[in-house]
Amino acid sequence: CNFSGTPGTTSLNASATGTHENATGPNDCTTLAVTAGQTYILLITNYSNNNTGFSLDFTPGSPLSYSSTPTTVVWTGGIDNDWFKPGNWGGCAIPSCTIDAVVVNGPVNQPVINGSGAVCKSLTINPGGSLSIQGNNTLQLCGDYTNNGDLSANTASTIYFGPGTATQGINGNLVGLSQFPNLRIQKTGGQVNLNQDIDIAGNMTVQSATSVFNFNGKYITLDGNFFNANGSTSIINPE
Image (tube, rainbow, N blue to C red; front, side):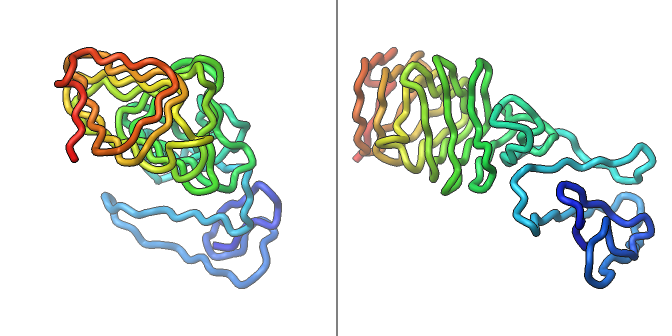
């Protein structure tokens, strides 16, 4: 439908047949006949390339039913750069061990982890996106890590893979300015696969006998110490 002529506000015309909030152009909305139980996808595009984020507000009388617990959240930076605020992730939820996080290029406010308790399922940093980890805080990943953008992590911080049994992957840009700070692997099963060469500014710890780290023939440049809980059964490096 037509977009709002008022910055920061876009809404559907009550009759679903008119233009919207001072927008110009022909009417392009029509009513939609639906049957109870049908499922539709609501597509929202950012026509004006506004980077401030947005929220959806369904009034109490709305017939729409939607899930407030998504499987993936995308960074909007709609409030500020705080990882822990739902409004910076589109307003529904923050990442968790069951919710993937995607950091995109565009928002002026890029995410910063400035406290304890940061966790996500898989993390993807898209080209042009960035993530900062401050202080001695930890980012826990229950799924994969893929960095096609930039990571800026204080050398006292930690990236932790675990604690479940899923196979996890480390992918993308892992060297230079996007090096890992400290790396900790503590799983109850499964393994973590390194899919690119990696620089680690601090320590690397394979924490438990049930944790397995697969080098996959890649190189590790380690500036700190290495702790391997269970000898050769914890580290594998097939050629």
